[in-house]
Length: 99
Image (cartoon, rainbow, N blue to C red; front, side, top):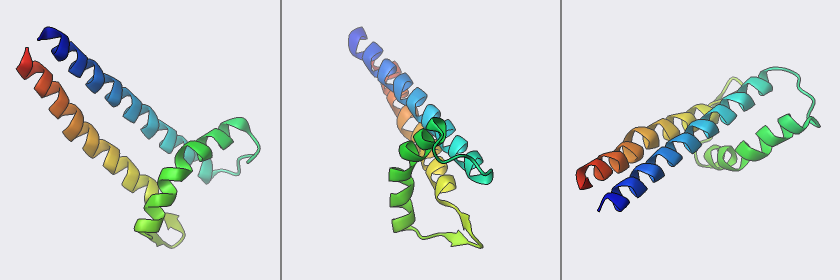
């Protein structure tokens, strides 16, 4: 049973790391949008290509833009924080309960 316990804990930690990394990618995109960055820069292109599919869907579902401010990154970060506090913690508690 400890194998399943370790597997669930590893999955929870990996998901937590990936979600945190994606949140930092979103924050990087927001910061890049504030400055006049070169759109042909590979880092800028990566940030846009990594975040635009998800942010575009949020903009379609919830067209929240007041005064030219796009709130879709904030909504996505809040969703990631919810998943981290609910799903990740649930997986960790499930793993501890099995041990």
